[in-house]
Amino acid sequence: MLRWYKCQTLGPENEKMISALLFPITSKLSIPYPKVYTFDSSVPIAFTVGVAKRYAIVLSKNTFDIMDEDELKMVLACEAAKIRDGSVPINTVVSLIAGSIISMSTIIMWMAMLAGFGQEKDIAPRIARFLALGLVSLPAALIVHLFGVNSVLRSDEIALLNVKNEKLFRETLKRMNNYIELHCTENFNPGHVNIFLINPLKVKDLFDIYSSMFIIKPDLEYRIKTIENKYG
Image 1 (spheres, helix red, strand yellow):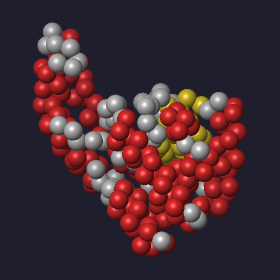
Image 2 (tube, helix red, strand yellow):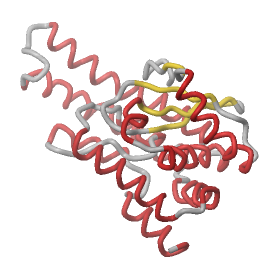
Image 3 (cartoon, helix red, strand yellow):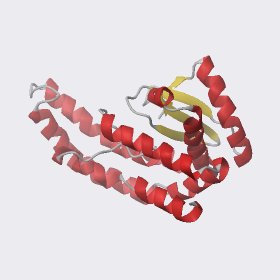
Image 4 (cartoon, helix red, strand yellow):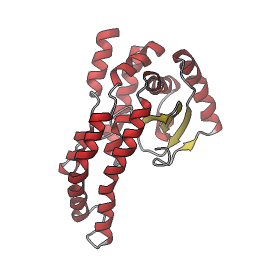
């Protein structure tokens, strides 16, 4: 997964800042200190992967650009909570398998383009990809639903108990979600949706309809309402 997103290690300045924020969290949760990576993305988004007690938290470069230290701490707490609740290893494997199946549809789209059926934004390659998605989405989505661990509410609670700031939790996640809705121009792999802190998939037209099959987590409003009812 790190190679998939072309992840890079942090620069010295960001590494020092993240270490100061993350070390108290991991110590309090009694989890192994994870490596932290970054990757290119136009939106603030994060995910955690790993197996055999070797974990990596991945933050997009945009996360560093638009978030202050308190918000970064909340994001890190949410990701560390996933390690604490034990969902990371199975979700990593599920995402890798489901994502690989889904990527076959992109290969078919590029084959259509190479065969002379227009450019990337033309209708023919998109139709080819849409038809391919129809073939690969069902088995990939079944893998996500049958084997993926939906522990988002539990990890939200663990994160909040660590940071103890319900308002910061609510505002941080809302800010990430709003930015993604307004500025996301990337086509994230639907097979990876179960590892992201915030769902980056949007159903804008018929060609995106299969993305809804992969959403196993409750939506953000439900997550926030659950926290407010318990700690508000």
